[in-house]
Length: 335
Image 1: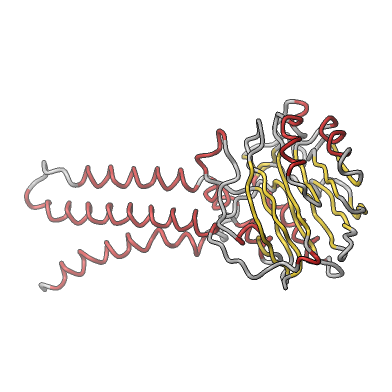
Image 2: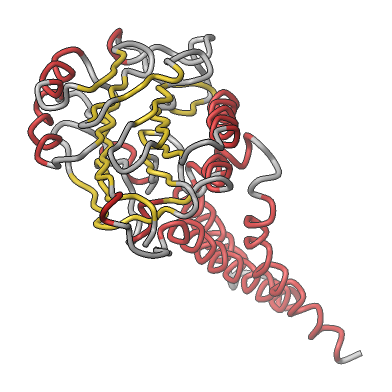
């Protein structure tokens, strides 16, 4: 049959072109395996494309028997299509979560200017940057006593812990601690008594997901030289705990802010956005991790707001001696 070779020729190409798109179907179904792939996705895509093109070059070699050249051309075509499709999937999967989807304008009479930063090793070097934001509420990860003391001069309302998640929250308005830091909460649950209306704030510094940990719930902070990390499964459990707190707090609006060490292309990010909206997508998103992790193109610092709230005037700002960009936004009920 003359049509048979033609069908064989294109069936393989179609399958090769569609196969990489299965990522969007399977990415939440294999737990830790796809969680890890999501973290390293840009590098994994590049490696896959290179291997596929190498294979295409190998099977495209002309030093093959004449009777097998047609087969080699088909295999080469399949390898090239698979490589190009994989590259396109990587671009969509990485840039897709950065596409803005602003929903409206903040009611200025109830607006809250909020900022978050992982201060990094410089600590006091970044104090002026933080104060210059003139935020109403400030969430700082990897904080120590010196910066806490410096910021408290401008923010008399504050809470901080200098071990474990090493996180501080500073507010122009009174704060009530609803839940302190604990094994299931790498941060604080706070009630912010804003003049225009109270809201609850989950300020968190979730440990970095890694393939090992200290054997505890999460390793202690870098103040003792240990990396602040947990297993991938441990990180997922902590995010689920945050989602549980969000879901059960139905009395007041809930805002989540901090270094969540959660890539926006991963399952844990989607768990949080089932309940809240990504406030930083009023404008285009961007990677927040720089330094040695910059090649991963990950946005792991986040600000989430409840449905019915909007965000304006978003920005990412540099922090001296930190491997993160900070974030700042005006949030509040929509007009």
